[in-house]
Amino acid sequence: MGYVNGLKCRECGREYPVDPIYVCEFCFGPLEVVYDYKKIKKALTRKNIEKRAKNLWRYRELLPIDGEPQVGLQSGFTPLIKADNLAKELGIKELYIKDDTVAHPTLSFKDRVVAVALTKAKEFGFDTVACASTGNLAHSVSAQGARAGFRRFVFIPATLEPSKIVASLVYEPHVVAVDGNYDEVNRLCSEIANKYKWAFVNINIRPFYAEGSKTQGFEIIEQLGWMAPDNVVVPCASGSLLTKIWKSFKEFKEIGIIKELGTKVFAAQATGCSPISTAVKQGTDAIRPVKPDTIAKSLAIGNPADGYYALRIVEESGGFAEDVSDEEIIKGIKLIAKSEGIFAETAGGVTLACTRKLIEAGKIGRNETTVICITGNGLKTQEALNGHTVSPHYIKPNLAFFEEVLKKIGH
Ligand SMILES: *Cc1c(COP(=O)(O)O)cnc(C)c1O
Ligand SMILES: [Zn+2]
Image (tube, rainbow, N blue to C red; front, side, top):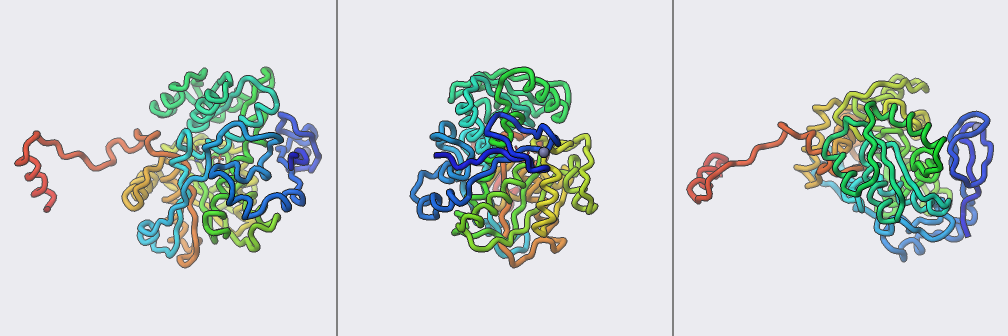
């Protein structure tokens, strides 16, 4: 009943059975899920999809599970918003926001990958789930893992925003705050994953987990009326989301759901952690790891696991990459809020500010259709805006005081 053929090394092509494994034993290349597209082509049509519940499992034939979905039955199918105010502000004709700020249940796109990872972890028979996280992944593993009845360990850099730590603690997982940056947390977790029989969603079951990101791409195409956009701008941490959005577009073409695919893929990063955009701009294939220093902590991966593949897709599709300063990130957050009423986290500020630069540089055409992926909610990173917002008008509970305010603002 499944549609998965197995796993395959992205480097040497060696094939593996469906197991909780993630690297090739021979060349250490990453493993990728391979599907039977002929079979899927018969089972998955626009009509079938449209009849199904509005969650990410409506594309289940293209997700790596064997049985019924068990986690995330309310996740996915977030709004695609036609952002006319923002388009005007940026001087382009057609702009859409893929709005994962309202993802269920933890308000970031990580709810997609975790829904798939935990369903797969159940199929594999794990009782404990874990992750190395820059914040949002820890929230989703903590929350969805609680509901699904797993024991949970989440590992984070101790320097995360305090509100991001609370947003994990409330679900009472074991939160391990490590004195080190994400790359050090990740290295520690690889060691732990080798020793203990736990499902580390982004380590030993990463090939399955990462497939969940494709649902954002499937939804973009469906919500545009079964059409791929001219441009898509994607924020990059490990680079996985970008590679999977591209994979989703290619798969819809492969199984005949769309006829044409000419999308250019753009990568967005913070200048304080920009190994991918730096390599794209320099025209090299070599990603040079960096030590992150940016307010966009959810994107602060200095040694991105999928960086090389993200870079190749940017080049293959004819896209480009950009990066922006902390100041530009804050301006970006405020612009989406003011123009479209959406409060995005720092990663959203990165995406918007990079989009502006790409338009100004002529990399994104002003008469084309552009989708920007806004991946997390601003209520989680309010600290970033301290001292950068307008101030309240403080008054006594008395009409005269209020009317003084009105006078002051020129009403
Ligand atoms: C994790 C994350 C991303 C991107 O993650 P990848 O590792 O590149 O897949 C983007 N935005 C937010 C808010 C995230 O939490
Ligand atoms: Zn290999």
